[in-house]
Length: 214
Length: 194
Image (cartoon, rainbow over all chains, first blue to last red; front, side):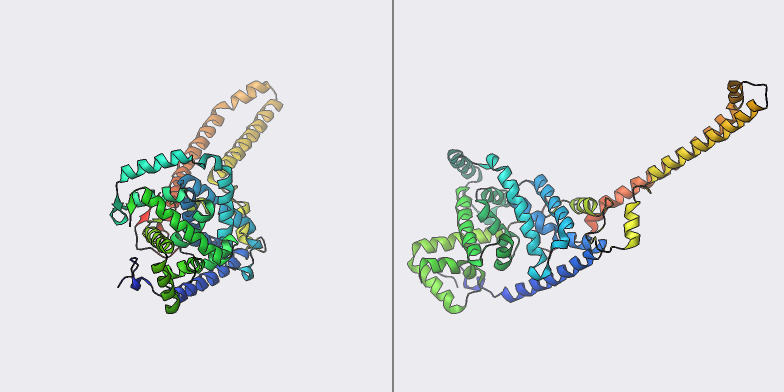
C-alpha cells in the first residue's frame, strides 16, 4: 500500500534500537582500542586506523570529490589523531565523533582555502545544468549504472553548501545517527535534521536538472 | 500540524521511526499542503538515490601509508606513557639496523682495518732500513690488492642478497592492505574505487 504521494507504507521499519546497539558496541570497542594505544600497543593503533579509514576517506572523498586530495586529508587526519590521542576523553563522547569532528575541521579549512576555485558563476551553472540534461537525457535513476550514478551524485553534492553537504554525507552516505552528526558538527539535533532536509531537497532539484528522475 | 512541525518530523518519517499517530498527522498535512508534499517527494527521492550510491573504498596503499607515517618512522606509539621497552628501543635503532647502513659500516671498518694493518707493515719495512716509504708501500701492493678484491667480491654478493631481500619485503608490504579485511560492516552494493 502506498500513500497518495507515492511513499510506501512498508518502507517504515523501526531500526533505531539496533542502530543504537551497534553504536554502543562500536563506542566500547573504540574506547578499548584507544586505551591500548595509550599504553603503547602498536597493534591497537593499527586496528583503530583500519576500523576508521573507510569512514574518514569516504567522507573526505564525497565532500571534496577529488580522490588524491581526499587521500591527503585522510592521512593528515590520522597523523593529527596520532599526535593528540592522549587528549581524547572517552567520557566526553565517542571516538568516532571526535575523529569526525577533526576530519570536518580539516575539510572546512581546505574548503576555505580553495573556495575561490569552487565558486560557480550562476550563468555558467545554468549552462552546465543544461548540458548535463542534454547529455544524460531524461532517465530514471534506477537505469544509471554505478559509475554514472556516482558521477551524478558527486556533481550534485558539489553544488550544495558545505553545511548541507556534510550533513547529507554523514547521514545518507556514512549512515551516522542524528545525535552523532550533531556532536561531530557541534549543532543541535534539530538543526541536523533541518540541514538534511534542505540538503536532500537541493540535491533532488540538482539531480532532476541533470535529467535524472525517480 | 504546521509546516514547521512537518519539517521537524520529515527525517524521522522517512526513517520510519515515527509513532503511528505522528505518522498519520504528517501524512494528513502533506495531503493538504502542496509545498510540504513537494518537500517530502524531493527528500524521499534524494534519500533513495543516496542509498543506492556505491560505497567508496579507500586506496589499497592508504592504510600502509598512514601506519608508515605514524608508527613506521621511529616514533613511539601514541601512548608516550610507558610503551614497551623493546618496542621503543627497536624503533629508536631501526634506521641503524637497515641492511644498507650495516653493510656500509662493515665495509668502512674493513677498509680502515686493512689500511691500518698495511701501513703498519710498510712502516716496519721502512724502519728496518733500506727501502724508502714509497717503495715499502709498493712492495705490499700485490697481496693488498688481492685481499681488497676478495673483500669487494664478498661485499657485492652480500649486497645482492640484501637487495633481493628488500625487494621481497616491499612486495609483501604492497600485498598486505588488500589481504586485510575491510574495517566497516560490508555493504551489499558494489564498492567504488575512485
